[in-house]
Amino acid sequence: MPKILGLNKERQILPLQGGTLPGGRQPCNEIYHLFASSNQVLAVFSTRHFDAAKDWKRFLESLKLPSDHFSTVRQVHGAKAVTASPSLNPAGDLEADGMVTREPRLPLIIRTADCAPVFLFDPVTPAIGICHAGWRGAKAGIIERTVEKMKGEFGTSPARLEAAVGPAICVSCYEVGKEFKNDFPNFVVERDSRYYFDLVGEVKSQLYGCGVPEISVRESGFCTACSTDRFFSARREGRETGRLLSLLMLK
Ligand SMILES: [Zn+2]
Image (cartoon, helix red, strand yellow):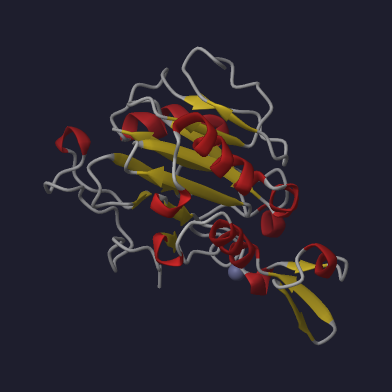
């Protein structure tokens, strides 16, 4: 069962506050909303109904957003977070793994298949940040760097941040080498002489370490590898599989 507050039991998109989706559309079950009750922010992730490589335009259109106005980056499993603007990176070829903005109506988009999409929402400023965190990014510090970027650029207080972790590989599906214990001592589980990494646990722990209150951190509860009928999983299906889209935008 998903653990996102505000995600309904049928795992369908929730009507936003006021009872309708943007543009008065009917809810569909191919896209999931986080912070669904917020009238300040749009935060969604897709299912494999939309493959990032070829369906990004259809994804944006399904959200009633212009297909030529968004910010994305070339993800490299690093720890660089940038301030997004429509003119900064029109080709999407800037290497980074996190983006922040306080610009309204500018969607920030990242792509994942097992790595964790991490959504950050500062309702006070308001401002947003999103990042792509796999084990490399988590080790390199992408989460802290994205939070720091929001602090530095916008004066965001981590204590006021709302955070959410989208669909990512779960600990049962994520067997790793013993050496992971060195980098993530609290989130590697040993079972029958095998080692498993709790990526979402690590991500949440890092968010808490940045000063985000535990009560303000949500998770989707979806495992990409357990649910390849619904999501893409690079581990289960191979690296050439599709990528899910995660989008965050100030309204
Ligand atoms: Zn799983």
